[in-house]
Length: 252
Ligand SMILES: NC(=O)c1ccc[n+]([C@@H]2O[C@H](COP(=O)([O-])OP(=O)(O)OC[C@H]3O[C@@H](n4cnc5c(N)ncnc54)[C@H](OP(=O)(O)O)[C@@H]3O)[C@@H](O)[C@H]2O)c1
Image 1 (spheres, rainbow, N blue to C red):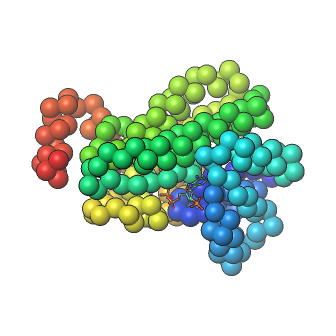
Image 2 (cartoon, rainbow, N blue to C red):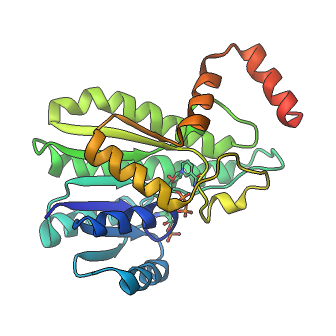
Image 3 (cartoon, rainbow, N blue to C red):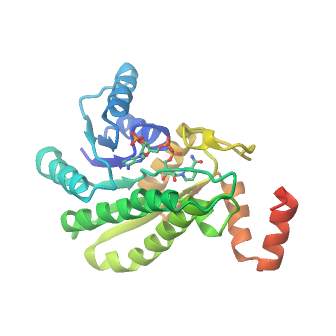
């Protein structure tokens, strides 16, 4: 039986992906910063699925100590990790377009430093094992968006990090993958005040992630195709046209 560790597995994409892997007979460990949310997630899964191979562990990824402790418990007491899905993130849309340094620091600590803490410990265990570290970034990281500020910056950094580590970790025999979902209906995106185009469910995202990691084994897993492909094109157009499009779209 193979083992996946999913950070941020208490809700949204992480939770749906946990269910998908359990259905496919994987041992699943979900973690998040809130034990109560994790217990609720556990109880929800228990209603429909066999949970004998489901574990919950509190792990605030912005704490280096908690990350180290959690990965050590999984590797030594549960099972070696085959896939680490680094999915946990904080989200805070900046509708008023205010520059708030506290918000930047929070998102850097969770989304960026948290991801780095996980990778730092995981690499020691995973090297030579041909395992996968998959980082959940976002198409928002392709280019700067209005109101995305701190969040977009951390997602751009995660994307760049994944591309860079793809090369470096080949030497350690660890596969790096990056996941770029379009708009998915979760607790985080319910904070958005705009209508999200091509909005999909977390279960849809879980299907794509499972298929991408297990069957396609591609470096980048992105979905739904049309909207993310459109955002990819936005990445390469000149600034003048890019800024003009945003002006037309929302008077930014
Ligand atoms: N939904 C979308 O449209 C979309 C699009 C592109 C990318 N993404 C990415 O997908 C991932 C999942 O997001 P989601 O939309 O599913 O949002 P979500 O439902 O809000 O899930 C976020 C998860 O992260 C956990 N988390 C937050 N802070 C944490 C911390 N300090 N330590 C550990 N866990 C923490 C949350 O659990 P606790 O509160 O229990 O800690 C929760 O389980 C994120 O990386 C996000 O950037 C989402």
